[in-house]
Amino acid sequence: QVQLVESGGGLVQPGGSLTLSCAASGSRVSLYRLDWYRQGPGNEREFVAGITASNRTSYQESVKGRFTISRDYAKNTVHLQMNSLKSEDTAVYYCHADPFGLPLSDYWGQGTQVTVSS
Image 1 (cartoon, rainbow, N blue to C red):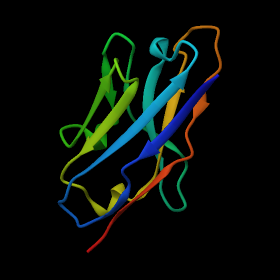
Image 2 (image 1 turned 180 degrees about the horizontal axis):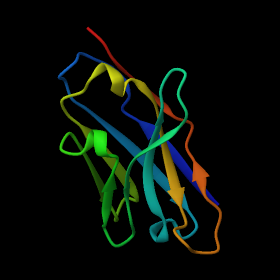
Image 3 (image 1 turned 135 degrees about the vertical axis):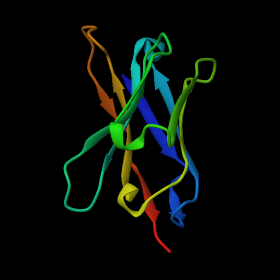
């Protein structure tokens, strides 16, 4: 069982920055790839960024160069630094633990709202 708790969402102006954090706890959490997904109004949930247990990162094309995912292995925390935010980044952001090929379940956090608006 893995528990994921997101924090750091809020209201920010276009062009601003925000950092999301996800605290992961539970069995073998260090083996998981930790991802951020988002779901905007009227949209399906989409992958934003991910980081593997070996620190490999991947990003959705629309956030490359603006978002940075990082992982604190000692604290089992993953961060998403978001810069140059746009109105289209407005969404509920979810932390996701992906077993990445291992015979384990995946898990979701409860989500945190990010609103980009002037």
